[in-house]
Length: 164
Ligand SMILES: [Zn+2]
Image 1 (cartoon, protein in one colour):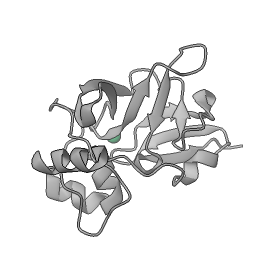
Image 2 (cartoon, helix red, strand yellow):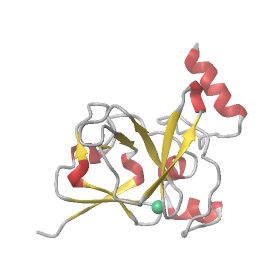
Image 3 (cartoon, protein in one colour):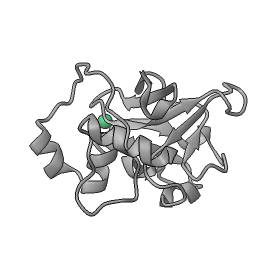
Image 4 (cartoon, protein in one colour):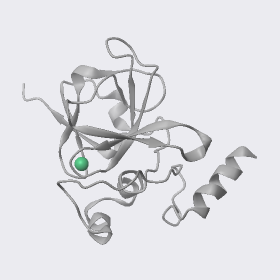
């Protein structure tokens, strides 16, 4: 019942998934800001896969336990797939048990946040500071030292291992 209502609300505000794709849920995009890297929507669609586009440009959320980055344990950085900016480091990654890659802090100044009131919840959305791509959300139930849980869509990130 609730799920259906949320879905219809999402459709009503014009955020609609690509045809045939059903693995994500949708949230409206944060208010527009200006970013160093910008593209027209058609260019973003060409640069990104359909699934990446849904997350980065339409604030979709990938289905939990689907990202290979969940199990990424090597040292290195996680970069935004929209613009290749390093946004998280393996040094802050931890196992949150949520099914999404989780970090207790971003790389300093790499991300921005915005209030997200979609789906009847008050959440803080996290976006790339260079291209504005939606990456995930941040919550207050993370581990020390920050107490924050950056809950990220693995599909929005590309892992770059440190050279040995
Ligand atoms: Zn980016």
